[in-house]
Image 1 (tube, rainbow, N blue to C red):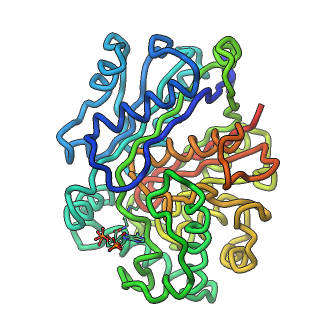
Image 2 (cartoon, rainbow, N blue to C red):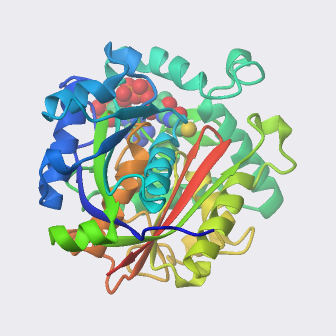
Length: 387
Ligand SMILES: CC(C)(COP(=O)(O)OP(=O)(O)OC[C@H]1O[C@@H](n2cnc3c(N)ncnc32)[C@H](O)[C@@H]1OP(=O)(O)O)[C@@H](O)C(=O)NCCC(=O)NCCS
């Protein structure tokens, strides 16, 4: 593959994640303005935007791109909304990346947003189930907690794992989230808290699940030439990979691995010219605690079946062997599904440009983002390097 341009992230911004009162249009604008200010550019420098959103209809606003561009004072600039379930953010980022790399645009805005909590638990669960293979899963009553519970059971059987092992993932991510002022769940928890929390879909309990969150995140993606001319802090995108898996879990050969993660990671590592060992920290898709364990194995950080042992030994904690989810991850930072993949890039930008405060991964040079849709039916992995 030949690329015309090196691609950089020049600025990043996010709203707080949580139950937000402002409208979807307002939070989309807030995150975008904050990324533009962080990049030190003017809205007029932006040539186009990619908006990542799944359930705009829940807050009575789809086709949100032109609304955002109008509010930024650049209504003549094109925009495109992309939906890829919980992986929408990283897929939008990937499309923007490809456009800058190909030389179509030198400066793009990528904003992810979701606003659903006002619809309540029942409706949000129902909406989210539309992201599964609805014929085989959603309509049969298998919502996401149930599907990931099936993976957790399979993992426990195959690798002799306990529920406490999964609980450790939640405790670690809440420890990190406490250090993140933008996190939805800024609360320290213990293994006992997780074990005593309500069963959602056995073996997964309340604290094994990410919450329903609202929020918006935004980044400015540009060519290296543009970044140098505009002078702010930037990081380089050195790898971009995508992969797919059978949409329904029943179509998979194994329940304890996500094929799309392996495919996307292999692509991204190859492009970056690195291996998993070179990654200093990673923001991975921990929608449920079992997912983080499976992710860290599929991304090549640990052998299959060794992910829980790594958590037991504290090897994925902040500033250990490899810091996994320094932001708090989906579990603690929250999971506004359209925003999550973009929010992961915001965290990597903040980490690699010295803006991550108390949760800084020391001496980090290479960060990775991993974000998937549904139970991993679609996935994107990106690798970033400090400049
Ligand atoms: C677990 C779940 C069912 C709980 O939802 P809920 O019943 O609507 O929860 P509520 O908003 O009523 O909150 C009840 C309490 O639990 C807390 N809470 C809710 N979800 C939580 C979570 N995931 N982790 C920790 N605490 C949580 C709330 O803060 C609240 O605490 P409070 O009473 O002290 O204020 C829901 O968060 C869920 O389904 N999560 C998974 C989302 C998902 O599938 N995403 C897509 C992934 S692919």
